[in-house]
Every structure is written in C-alpha cells, then in structure tokens.
Image 1 (cartoon, rainbow, N blue to C red):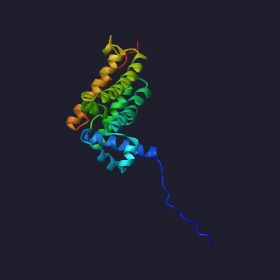
Image 2: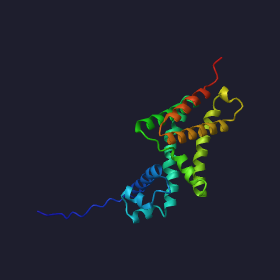
Image 3: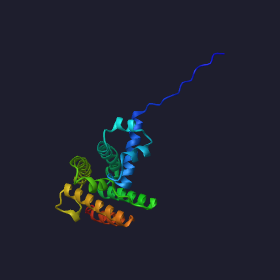
Image 4: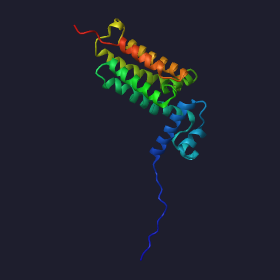
Length: 207
C-alpha cells in the first residue's frame, strides 16, 4: 500500500485578514477611542502578527482612515441611508432609522455613541486627513437626505427651508441626541428627538 505524504495546509486569505483587522480596529475605536487604541491592541484583537498588520496598513493612521472610509461609512449606510431610501416618506425613514438604533441601544444596555460623531469630535480638529474623510461621510449622508426631501413637498413646519438645510437639521438633531444619549447612557434622548422629528417632518395634509 502506498502512503501519501500530507504536508501542512496553509490558508492564504489576505482579504479576510485585512477585514479582520478593520473589524477589530473599528470595534476598539468605538469602545476606547482612536487615541487610546494602540496598534498592539488591534493586532491582539485581530490575532495577527506585526508582519501581517503592516502588510495591509503602513501605520495606525492608515488603518484609521480605512476604518472611516470602509467600516464607518458602511455602518452609516446600513443604519441610516438604506432605511431612508427604502421608506415611503422621509419622515418614516427617519423614524425607522432612529427607532432601530434606539431599540438596539436599549437592548444592549449601554451607549457608545455614533461612530461618525465620536471620531469627528476626537480627530476632525487636529488632523486634516481625518477631517476630510469624516466630512465626506457627513456630506454623503446629507446629500442622500436632501435628495429624498426634494422629491416631495416640504413639510409645513419647514416652509421656505431648502432640502439641504433641512437635511442638515436632521443630522444635527440626531448627532446631538446621540451625544446626550451617550452622556446619559440611555436611549431616551434619541427616542425623544425621533418623536419630535416625526411630528415636524409630517407631510402636508391632503386637501
């Protein structure tokens, strides 16, 4: 009987490894902040070597920018843009997005804040590259809302307000409510802001 030699099987999945590093970094940045997370923390969480880390990211800043452009942007699209685009009206889209986020916060029992807001507060003032990357996310968010708002009559409560300014107001209300929710460790401010926005965004009554 012939015996075949079995060598060690090596799995080569560079994209999977890169994704694992990004996921670990995104979670750590959200929990601890960018400055309080080290490259060593990310490597340990992702279970990768220094060589593997630096094969994909030349520095912590490069990793941070990739997290903003790939993970934070994707999270925003899933949590906000997709619900707004899928809903029959902007008001219902805002309700669905904020309601789902508030429900998730209530279920998990703690509030880490909005990843876009957290990183903007921590990094936008001191680093122009992060500021540009975060500003691009806010701009896309506002543009999607403004486009949706422009496709229907402006709610009576906002008569004379441009779709872009109304979109900015919605983002400001959400961002402020999330900051308050984080300070209070309660989704209550987000729930209250969502309820008020729903009333303000109600479409004109049919005649």
